[in-house]
Image 1 (cartoon, rainbow, N blue to C red):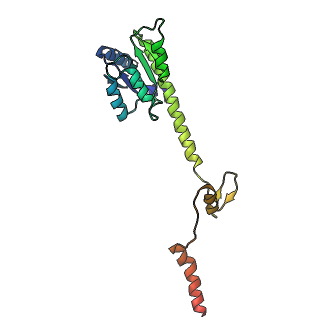
Image 2: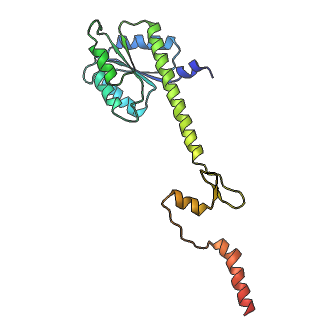
Length: 209
């Protein structure tokens, strides 16, 4: 599948209290064929929305009333299941010689930083780069989950039912489980085995008496 098609299907949150700024963001993203864009008008709304559905990237304005972009970023990065979300901070404050907004953004966990006014090309390049890295992270996570699942599969002999252990030696099931868990075995006889093995022996003993 075309990588850009996959990236365009990823969920983008654009957060700004200024409607004009949000419309500009949305226009650029739509022009670059991103299909899933959610416009959010405050830091408080962002924190509500993110609990309903986690995005693949957040474009976050810094200067907002109430919960600022810094506040929202700090909160998101403090939650384990959310801290992986890439956040690009956007601000109208010129950097000039004052690098404080840049420093604080990265210290709080932002992936990138864009100063207004920005070009459509700049925004698209930064968004695509962040989404690409997030897709790679997700793909790696899926691969690791698959590996863990495969590691949890135990080869078992179809005939004797022994299990192949890590050193490739074949062990009885109860020996393997006893060595790898806290489980202790007590032996009993199931009804089918009683009927198949024990009852014939008892009947044979009775008939010989």
